[in-house]
Length: 409
Image (cartoon, rainbow, N blue to C red):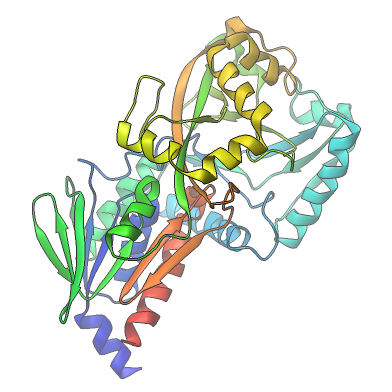
């Protein structure tokens, strides 16, 4: 134990990536006693990509396979995130959600979700066995059965990121923005990390690269276990006169035949209601619109055989998602399944996010959190939703792994 404490006190630890997971990792390392922690972020401000381009949901863990990293960390992370928000006076609300079955087939899948939720330790789940019980919570929602999830909520992730950055600095850590990592190599003294403006030395490196995580693995000389393929999710926002149609969060029952959840309704923490997202291949890893094209990113996606196998496995879905991206009427039609009163004229422009979807060579999506380890380096390769909700728990787990592995060096 003494040797580990000495190592932790003296180690120079570098965290690459300033999204919520990277920020949480640096914070957890400092909390654990690692004194020399530096975080580098390529953008001019932390948390400018996935962390703040989302609907701001606090996920409870209902959808995730019991025993998976997603399930364990989302349940733990939700509790930690709520406590963090309370301590730092960050806007949040545990408003609850309903997951609605609209067909008899979906009611069977609802049973599976109920089993997952109870096994994952969710508190207060309630079955809604009729349309009348659904309308008691969401008067305008359609459905024949549902699950009410009272622990689900909404939050201001921008404020969470800023609070984490302030905590890192308070504990003596450093944050370097506008510092894109361009190279990594090892020598006898440790890691040398080259950024756009500086050269940094570290005894241990943790990368939380999000949309660029696989590239950081290659940059360190290791082989990524999956390729990041960016999928854009586009939202509409309900006009103010229509926000009364949604009181809480309204979600569909996931279809296991499709890789994405489907459109749903989300209340926003600062007012309004968002509807979406769809899922279309982004033409850039940070491509938040059809106009955003990066030839390197696009070429890398199109050259990846796994993407073509994915498209061959889901041709109808992929085509439909593109069609729905350009058709407001079709987007509205898919929303009517959950809230029939919605009309196209009640949908205004909303935001968009890009999901860093890890995909294997056989075209299957990597669903769980994934790490790649090397000598004195730990890469977070895949941290999909609910990574924002679970970020404090993920950071805690990463810090434990990093400290444990560093102690063995």
